[in-house]
Amino acid sequence: MTHTEIVSFIWDVANLIRDTFKRGKYQDVILPLTVLRRLDCVLAPTKAKVLARKAELRGLGLEDMDAQLKKASGFAFYNTSRYDFDRLLGDAPALAANLRNYIVGFSDDMREVIERFDFDNTISKLDESQLLYQVVERFGTLDLHPDAIDNATMGTIFEELIRKFNEALDENPGEHFTPRDVVHLMVELMLAGDEEGLSRVGTVRSVYDPCCGSGGMLMIAKQRILEGREENGELLRRPINRDADIHLFGQEVNPETWAISRSDFFMKDPEGHDAKRIAFGSVLSNDRHAGQRFDYLIANPPYGKDWKRDKDAVKAEHERGAAGRFGPGFPRISDGQTLFLLYMLARARTPKDGGTRIAIIMNGSPGWTSRRRSQTWPGRAGGVRRVSARRRRAGPSRHRSR
Image 1 (cartoon, rainbow, N blue to C red):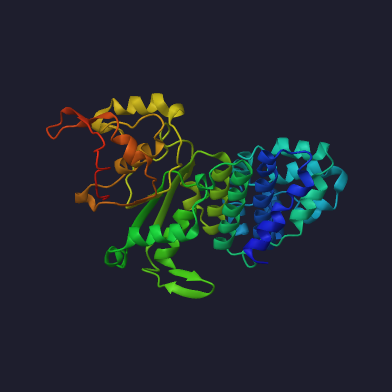
Image 2 (image 1 turned 180 degrees about the horizontal axis):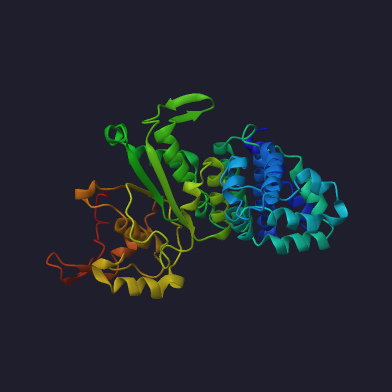
């Protein structure tokens, strides 16, 4: 099946639940079950080995089995429940209880991911409506093992589903989804001219997305450096350095997309290092990577979003001056994009430390609104001066992005 066929197959679950769930709640069913089915397929080859190892370690009286069970599964997560999708469907009357048992069987990091979906309430609602078996059965027919659906395709499937959810809510699909062609272009521009440095032996680089959504930008940046770019089996760009050590960092405020990105990164990296650096929360008020600076910064901040919920924290940080992230000032409350740009500049390395390359998508709104209000900016001598800019009658002033 192509990724388009899989998205259509999964989305068709909406026909089963439309009388019980509103359009805006379809994702409460579809996203967690897609993640669970993917995890189920990924762990299937080593499931028996994990259960046998658990029994063996328990017989030896060992309580802390985490490291050993991760080794047995081949990933930085595992599941110790005796259930999988086949066994769940084999006991229809107890499906709800067994599904909960299955979820509890995941290791701590992965169970935290599932809990972000608030799936327990969805299980109850599906069970009460006598829909749980039908929905789980439908997902159980999907083969989402990486041998059938590689990681890049799975990422595209998640992004397509999110786009559909946003369209169902009449929301901007770009809030959580950036077209892959656009991301590839951003990555090419961000890395252009830095190939020589990236190609050196022992190269270590960090890439950070402060509003990472489902993690597509981060993963494409890493793949471009280590693997190149392929499309339909054709190599379009050669890898820059297969041996480079690329560390990914991200943060995401939406619990569902955070859960998708973190689970996806756990499956892509057997050691789980990148996944553990995908933090949850708003970077504007709760910076989970505080004090760190990065070699590359890439983001598509949400358009038209205000920063009211983060206002107190942002203003408190501004009062710290150069020691904070928003020392130069802040835009009007409706302009969250500019605030993200300020944040990214604060996470850039200084030129003497090698500098930072930044790729960011912004619409024209910040450029227009910033010229219609006065702002406070630091003066050259460390003082503060007021700057007020007005739009010229002949049109907006021309400026270069750096």
